[in-house]
View 1 (cartoon, rainbow, N blue to C red):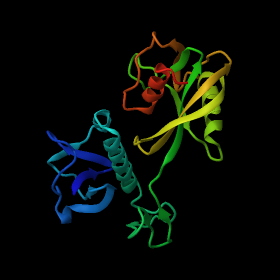
View 2: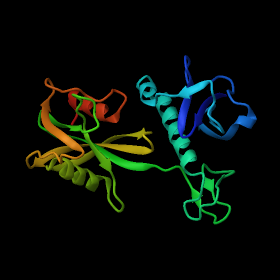
View 3: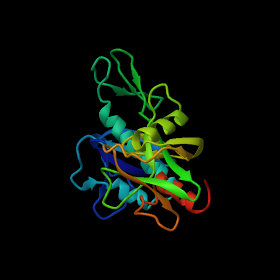
View 4: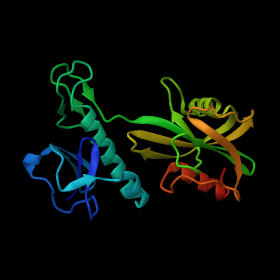
Length: 244
């Protein structure tokens, strides 16, 4: 068995080693909860922040991960956040306890069950022949552009969310929306549903709030791109390889 450790909703790591421990790094009295996150990997939630461990730079670690490790760290990070944010019942305010069978928090007072939250999002690369639409979010590092994304609203299909988000963020219409791939995104609990969509009309008008700049780019004239581990980059790479 190997172990990951969290406290306060964040994964922890030793300063000079991998965050995956081959031997249990916490004593039983120091452990608040345990959750399976992969075959032979367990997440330990520490009661108090261990003095010998530091917060893990999750984005940097995911950049080095293969598919299996990415899935493991994503699951562990999302469970850590869920555990930390659902210590009390959202209905009656009573302390929750762990379910003995399911991955859930139970309220002994009112019976409410709370499972790990997963927030579905769409992320889209809009294409128009040999060019693609990329945009800058106000929070991005200088020079970085990416695909467009947003949360799916209540009662909305993923395809409807694609059309709405593109229209709201950059003012254009899209058609021929097609699903490509998905990715768990643990910042903090998203499930990214990746799509291609064809440009169907309209002039680019960034909303000026989330999107500060948007433009059409050819394969040989690209701006700074998102990190390779992200699904946004994967969509762009597929376009560069001729898929659309």
